[in-house]
Image 1 (cartoon, one colour):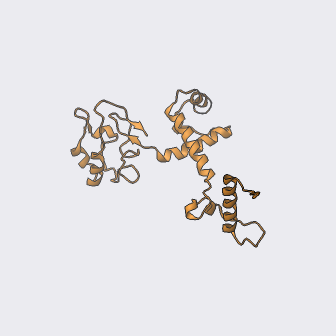
Image 2 (spheres, one colour):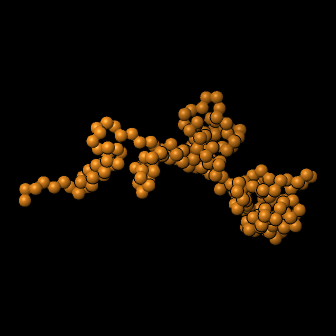
Image 3 (cartoon, helix red, strand yellow):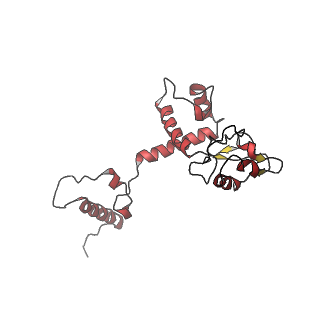
Length: 200
C-alpha cells in the first residue's frame, strides 16, 4: 500500500519522451540524436513529431494581416501605413520604399503570398481584364487558356456580358476563345443587381 504512483498526466509525458528517445536512435548511445526538420515536422501518424513549420505558419499570419489591410483600407492601421508607405497608390501595388521598417517588410512578404491566392469574383462592371486577370475558377491559372486573337476588341470581362439580361454573350465568347474556355466561363454566375467585381 506504500507504493508510489505517478500522476497519469506526468506518466503519459514520461512515456511519450521515452518512446521518442528510442525512436531517435540507439538507446545505448548517449549522444544527441539529430533528425532533419522535414522529418520532425511530419505528422505523428507519418513517423514525425508533428512540429509546425514555423516559417510557413508565420507567413500565413502575415498574409492574414495583409488581407485585413486590403479588405479594410479605412482602418487606422491601414491608413497609417498608407500615409507612410503608399500615399499615392493602393496596398496591392505598394512598393517597399527606401526606409522600410521590419514590420512593413514583413507585411509585404505576406502580401506576396496573398497575391498568389487572390482572384476576381465576377460582378457586373469593368474592373476585370479579360486576358490578364485571374477570374475563371475552373481554369488552371484562373485565366483563359486561349490566346488573345489579333484585332480583338474585348479587353474587359464586362465586354462579354449582356448587361440587359445579366448573362454571358456566348456568340461573342465563341468568336474570341476556344470551346473549353467558353464552357468554363458560362458556368460563372453574373450579378443581376449590378454588384461590383470583387477580389476574393
